Image 1 (spheres, one colour):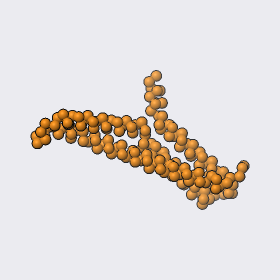
Image 2 (cartoon, one colour):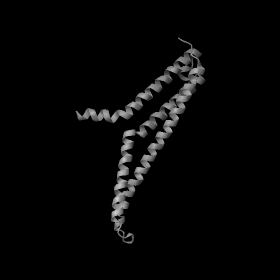
Image 3 (cartoon, helix red, strand yellow):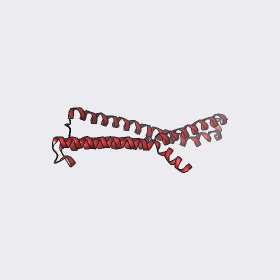
Image 4 (cartoon, one colour):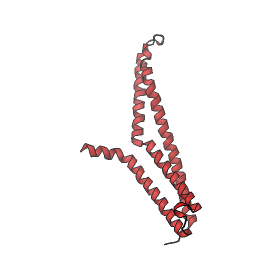
Length: 158
């Protein structure tokens, strides 16, 4: 086995952990933003639609209809974006990978779990292999998440 230089590889793991953490935070924020916003607008649509029936508002039918159309379209667009971009799935995927890399690094540093009886060189090789596999699996899972609907739709449209 070739010699592993920790100072060359271990910053890569920290870099990936930080990247996954940042992506998870953004995906969670996007997911919550789309859900809260679309939910709020969906609740307001019937209220705005019925405003024209309240006597003290006067005749606001035209404005009410336009606003309902805009709000309904906005809700549809937000839900479509969530359906296509899969923010929740990405958030869970990125967070899981970041947590896995963190756990694996702790196990390696403390020589616990699968590293308990390994010498430094063997432990480094195992750690690198496990982390690289996790990164590769995350990449494949993300591609699967983002292309799942097209594959499913193509399969059923034949």
